[in-house]
Length: 77
Image (cartoon, rainbow, N blue to C red; front, side):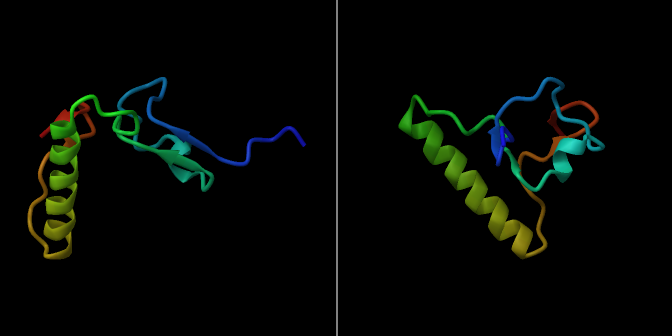
């Protein structure tokens, strides 16, 4: 039918993507935080995975997260 079934984006026209953007509500859209591309250094991938694992553990245990983004500025708090 010429329709897109789903999409994944790593970059949006406006960044950071505003909290009220209708893109957040699309069920067939995956938005990644600029980490979907290839990692040029194995150490970078390891760091990203470690931070993600630490944040998952912190979230599940009600502890503060690392590298929280301030959506007003688009940068780390």
